[in-house]
Amino acid sequence: MIEKLEYLLALAKEKHFGRAADACGVSQPSLSLGLKQLEELLGVKLVNRGSRFVSLTTEGERTLEWARRIIGDARAMRQDIKGLHRDLTGQLRIAVIPAALPMIAAVTRGLFTNHPEIDFTILSRPSNEIVPLLENLDIDAALTYLDLDPLTRVTTIPIYRERYQLLIAKNSKFKRRNTATWADVAKLPLCLLTRDTQNRRIIESLLRDDGGAPRISVESDSMTVLFAHVHTGLWASVMPERIAQAMGMAEELHAIPIVEPEVVHTIGLVMPLQEPTTALAAALAAEARRVGAELMQSN
Image 1: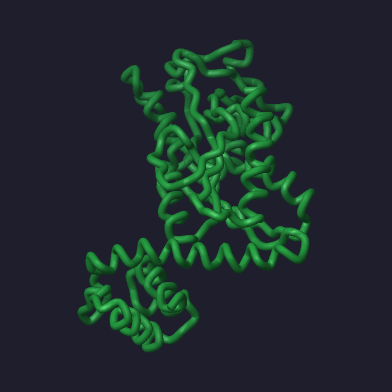
Image 2: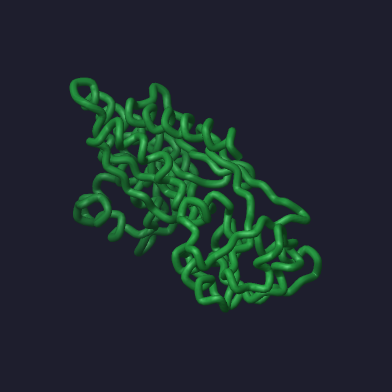
């Protein structure tokens, strides 16, 4: 039955029979047959079909909720049982918002040191994709904003607070200032993260609050690209304080705290609520709490 629930989960995600079959590693007829068998077993219609996939029925949506729980528990059980007789092993898939990517190493470093058989897949994803990825079991955890997006049915672990700095080249006219205002920043040619990121929406809203019209002439989903453009001396950027520290400041760059107002958001790890939890998930949560205790205290 779990295999058939996997088919339903894939179909809900792909919304296409062929792509769902590919994702499950089976032929399309096998997937369609498995879904029909699941419908017969449950005694309800789960999928609205035409010549192609249309939608899940109301019963299909409710079955999907159960499928996510059952599949998640089955995967967790297999992983947990394997870990009983050997050192902690397995793969952790973690999605990270672009503005926090350099900070995930603070968590993975300690976990890998204690359990070198663990493998990590780190994915860069905007915050609005985090919850669907968790629900569809595509990731095991995420590093994202805890105080902005609605987060339900998850465990949250605060790790650090995000404060903003103006990042400029050392030859900038601002280099002798101790602070900058958002009104100051709005007058500069800027390079920022792309519009699909929460970081960009936060910063752009702050820049426009006083009726300003910021000149954002470069955007990228890579912090490395933004650093490179600031390095030219032609652009400035707005960086979370922790990220500028984590990536290392080149001698040619300078960071100035942005005030009026000072804005603070909490970044943390989110994981699905799961009981009993696996040893791997417990180790990740424990390391995130340890790192969070250090960083939140120093922040």
